[in-house]
Image (cartoon, rainbow, N blue to C red; front, top):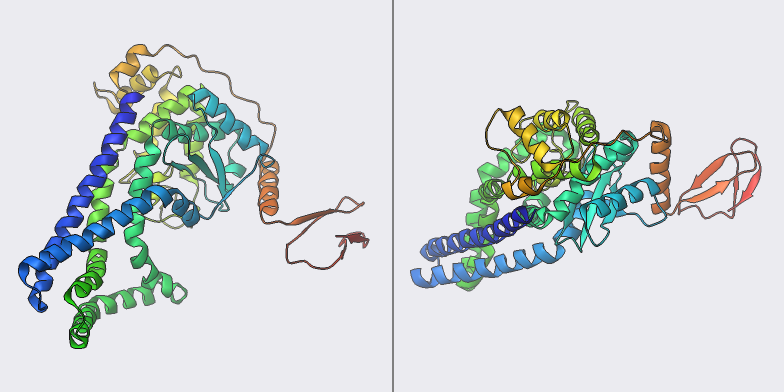
Length: 426
């Protein structure tokens, strides 16, 4: 997949350079506009604007590159699991790591959310992680979970994760101030109507507030460069939706098709991923940790109408039904067969897999389905046990067979069994 790797690297450079140029242009234009209500002349205003936008852009790029993965993990509420937790998922990730040829085992994180979803992040294959929700672990059998993990490992192998981390972190960084002071977050408990009213008030009185701040700064005699710097940030915030559109244009749906094809090859069982996508799409749970900035990194767009299944209409992912049909049409598990299935489903002559890959692809027979050794209840209990362990809950086993979980805040030296009444030491 060297063509896809080079494609993603080129896209990353274009994204950074293109958005940087837009930021410099915005800074220059804003500096010119600022010169009309400050003592600074037109030329100096433009220079100040470029300097301010350059400093902000360099900071955002460095922040996105070095801390983007940590920010995304924190936004998702993901928690890292160790070698002694969830042997099933650890074993599957290790299998897919070997099948894909990755040299280093990705870290594994889980999100405590009943929604079914997953994503991968990282700067490169040596510093990558796979993140899954507890709902996914509880609802999917081994074949289905293997298909999802194979898909995410493919994103790591194809270097999709760097491009996606840059896209989501750049957009997320620009959205931080907007999110912090958004009416939806500050007044969420008052309902949607109050949120709409507050948004309308801010829209009406926002410009007047900015003008009042300008007049106050001029009255206090603050230097013009400081005025440019203070006012550039809210101006950039107003342009965030426009920049978000550019980021979405930089994200190709092709990466999802290629990840699906790679998963089929790694697992040698495309039906597993197809079945997993059907379950994920049919789930009506909304992923609470998702945001418009992070939506492209998930295996399926996490946003859906309340109580509804996922929609085919999405800007960053191919239609779910098409992805499932392609996987179910496949007769073998090779890239060539995925490309044939893609052309058959879309009724086109041009496929999605690079020609060089198809030329070197051999026929890979599909394996049989794996017999699942855990039912839904057992998978849910296994996942709950890991969450309790991560939260440092203490496990007390009473002689009557009762298992008691005590939170870290429990400070008493003994606990009474609710069933047999025996006093057990903590």
